[in-house]
Image (cartoon, rainbow, N blue to C red; front, side, top):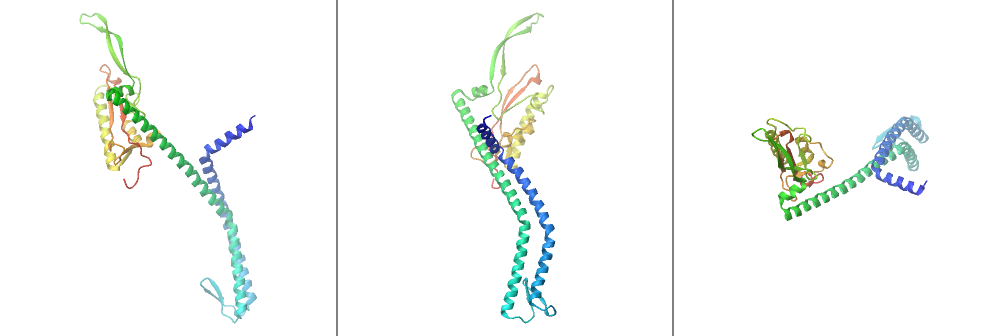
Length: 317
């Protein structure tokens, strides 16, 4: 067994799962703080009783019991009896020592609770800091990939045109197949027919709206008209949300269209006021209609997201 390799892997795993480990340790530290707080509180009554006894002893050492009169003023015990200046200073000094001793005892009783509470807060804040840095790195990487892909698509459009770029993106293929056609005289003959299919998918955030992918898809009968109108209405509804709220996430649009949410859909979306976007939601719609069976109709939707907006939403928007 290679111990060096094993320890190296353990160290990497500990670093990889550091936030989870720190959160778990923080919870345990918080529970420990609660335990020691209760424990210290249970000792508090006896500590205060002992303090009271010692204070009374100090008073009796300096003042005859029949002449002892306590006057509380600004939290300091004073005596209404005749004492020399030196005796009075000694008396105050002994009282101070007892108060200091009691304060130290109380602090000692609660010290474990305070230490564990600080450790719990530190671990939780540390875990948040690590996760925050990781999210920032992930957002930066996602923005970089999104920008690179957009630039690549633009170069393809510039060279081959927008329609050709769209066909490439969707994996458009055209093939000739022999189709049996029935003639007027009842006979049949093979006819060469050109068929177009789309084997690819929309862009990174794009989706295929069909009977197999969208929960709101309506097939047969008036389904084609309904589906097209539905997509256009969702586009308008998304823009209304954008104008009303100032932002909308891609996952929210997915939900409206009947698609499943994605992790990246909660990070990217649209902002109403942005220098890098269009300020409106648009679906680049590519229709592939099957006149023989409307259930086979497909709409390829590509969304003009502004990119990552998760970290750009603020009260100043």
